Length: 339
Image 1 (cartoon, rainbow, N blue to C red):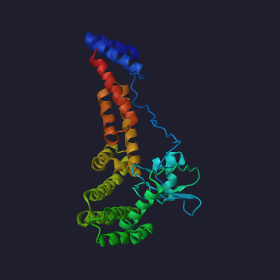
Image 2 (tube, rainbow, N blue to C red; image 1 turned 135 degrees about the vertical axis):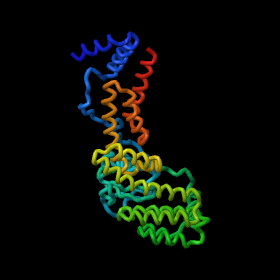
Image 3 (cartoon, rainbow, N blue to C red; image 1 turned 90 degrees about the vertical axis):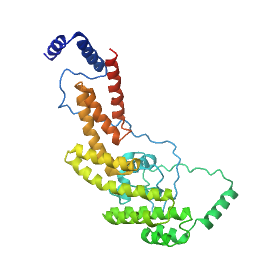
Image 4 (cartoon, rainbow, N blue to C red; image 1 turned 60 degrees about the vertical axis):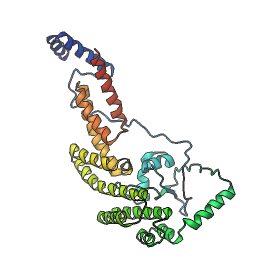
């Protein structure tokens, strides 16, 4: 009966329009979709298009050897790291990031930062090969000696090692070399970011914002170091919106959640990829939009479907499913235009 209705509808249309509709239906049928019935009630499973692959030979900088605890290994966070990538590279599965949360007393909405020390479980741990230093031994010794005399601050490093970041910040601010010594500035930035994360874990976000704002405006920092603190402050402020975004998503208010996610992404960008609260909320909103887009796609509403995939890509430019279907829609539209 559905087939008969479709045929009758096409006969009533002008010849050129009917021909285009038949061609479009045939083209999309070849792509694995049928439009003979409304599938608004069909739930389309969303599958991760990029399954984890265990790295056979990963070379990275592990700044610490295993500590005295037999069940942990100390890793210092590198640029571009996330808990998922660390778990994948060292533990063989990104899903083991939950173990890192527990072991390091982190909550799902905590982000990690470059230089942070993380404990890794030794069970299933694959320790990568250390990078070989190409400098001769004598040259390495000379570099070490030069570094120890110009950029080493034992008292400050002891405070940071003890995670007494507030005292470390005050020590650096009172040092006469702060305005001219880039290494000292970097240690101050590290201590400030670490203290900010401590405040966030204690739910003292106002103190974290005051600390970062004060250093940005008052401390004699170079532009790159100041920009790093400004990025941290932007992330902190965006995270306040993320809590509301998650609440919206939990109540299925996906459009409201999306607007907050988009605003946070536009202000902070890629660093949010390290924030589990952002990524989990984004995944929930994206899945809902994928469902809507696929239903529209199956009912020949290509332009409407494309709107949702573009919205997904606006907060996740690397969403594989959205990229695939965006290209597929454009290809189908081009075929139709060329009929």
